[in-house]
Image (cartoon, rainbow over all chains, first blue to last red; front, side, top):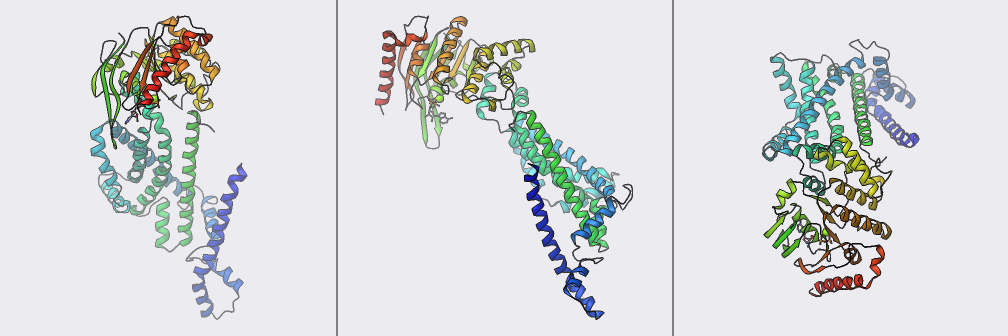
Length: 289
Length: 256
Ligand SMILES: Nc1ncnc2c1ncn2[C@@H]1O[C@H](COP(=O)(O)OP(=O)(O)OP(=O)(O)O)[C@@H](O)[C@H]1O
Ligand SMILES: [Mg+2]
């Protein structure tokens, strides 16, 4: 079972590594050849491959360089250190989670309003959709600056950007879920003369749960994106976004790539966590294995 | 009079024209009667039950349930409804599906439990209370939905082909059970079926319908004795009534 799941994943990782190494050599070769020429060194193919993988500021770092950097900045550094990736990850993670929770809550509330109130459906939905057509990169700095001006800084402004991104899939998925019950089941509830509240709590809400979890998987991943984007305009103090930004200031490509890889790993872990929560919930709701 | 339909009409507006689901339906069902509706597919049996249940609004004529408009009757929880499909909530166990209407009525949990157990036993699902719907066969699911309607314990039962998905033996058994329950409780039952023997075996009155437009072609009052063992289906009297129903159905078809 585990083997069946692991094997394809490992195969893909191996394939990516091979391609990555190929590009490392290819992209770093021009500069290396330049060096050889300047110092009039004799070089063989093996030299070239070895040297292109050992640049300080390569165009594209080799996977093992990135892994070594990650190792150095996680295991070998105290978590309280400003150079620890764990420290930066935690900064980003905390605002991701706060933003995700607020976004999920907002999205659910909006969905409930929309489903339970016709006027809301007509008036709210266009705004919700319009809100997502504005590029986040354009409004993230404004949110940060405006909130800073009224004395809010740190976690909350970043989390709000995550909220802004994540409430949307939740609202859309939840509306669909709340409207998903079979008409026959709604008729059944009608024959019991049940109240709106009873209809909501016994039928609509449970029906929406699978939709909610699907949306949450999307929402948590874009919450992370939101948190990273939110760190960019703050002048690169802390967080994975800050690492990306300072890395690009100083041409530290290895640092950029290790922050990127960490962000990707974090995203994967978050999605897996939501997945596990979804499975537990659905098991409790009697879903077949 | 529990149900009184007078020149009842119902037209569905569809994309390809108007469907006359019910045309000039006149029918009276008295308290304690067991009435079967029988007729080919699409003749409006389900639609008629849905009108009684206030799930569909007639476009003409009048209908009264317990002397009231159907909406009033629905709000008073005057009937239990068994749908053509089981309509169980997939995230609730069988027992909790059966207790659903009881929860909504706000019965005490003791009362709920007592009724659920009794109904599970009645429909022969002992030991399946803790299972989820997908763990049961289609026929068992249908029995659970019958148990749910019976647990509701209204004086009027509307049943839309409740035994259609069951095998012959279980069907016979549940027919007997239903007949006993009806005799014991004096409920009024409005029962849709495609089976002539089932209709004759159960009913005090058989309503034969025909499609396009949906209308009543014959109403047969059965004079079979109240006490009906299963082998009554072999008696000449039974066969005679069955023959009349069959002729009624054939007449409806001949119109096509
Ligand atoms: N919601 C609807 N919209 C449009 N037409 C409908 C609707 N419901 C039913 N009809 C039509 O009304 C007619 C009667 O349908 P109904 O479901 O009452 O038939 P039925 O006698 O119960 O058939 P069956 O034995 O197959 O269950 C059919 O022609 C059907 O197509
Ligand atoms: Mg039908």
